[in-house]
Image 1 (cartoon, rainbow, N blue to C red):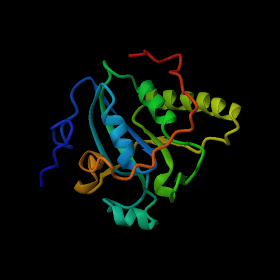
Image 2 (cartoon, one colour):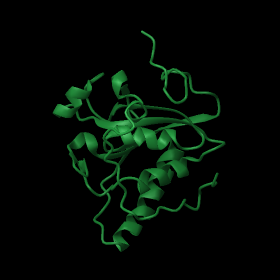
Image 3 (cartoon, rainbow, N blue to C red):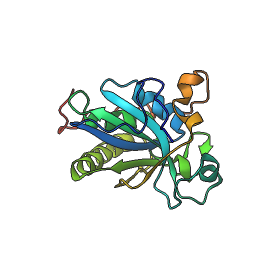
Image 4 (tube, helix red, strand yellow):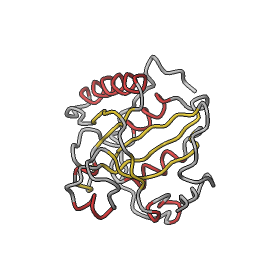
Length: 194
């Protein structure tokens, strides 16, 4: 079975990652708004929504929402690292959701909406941990509780059903619960800027 074609980028969701490109996986609540946020970022080559961080193989949206699979709703982002840095993607991640809410984002409640960063290598892990510590300090100054974001090694990513891919492109007025705290997350000192 052929993978669906990305509605924005016009390439198959299972397209081979070009040489020199990297990938990232982020969980920030309902994945519809998260995917749109990242596909709008300069340097992003592909996005797709799915599930990760759980135990069940190839779960459906319905199974994940029912609980028990342990998966989070996530977005896989493939990006040109010569045009956008991983640190910039982390900045977008921190500024566009509330990473202190545990198993929820706003009105979306359940472990599938938890804040999650899946890392593919030691460099991503170091950058994610550094940015988490920095943003945690910035939030604390503003009276927020501790960050609950998990930073874990990338495991299996299970693509969500086709009707969830680029959902807010098909339904521009569809539900999007994505809300940040208003606290800025400047690029870390190790970031190259882009």
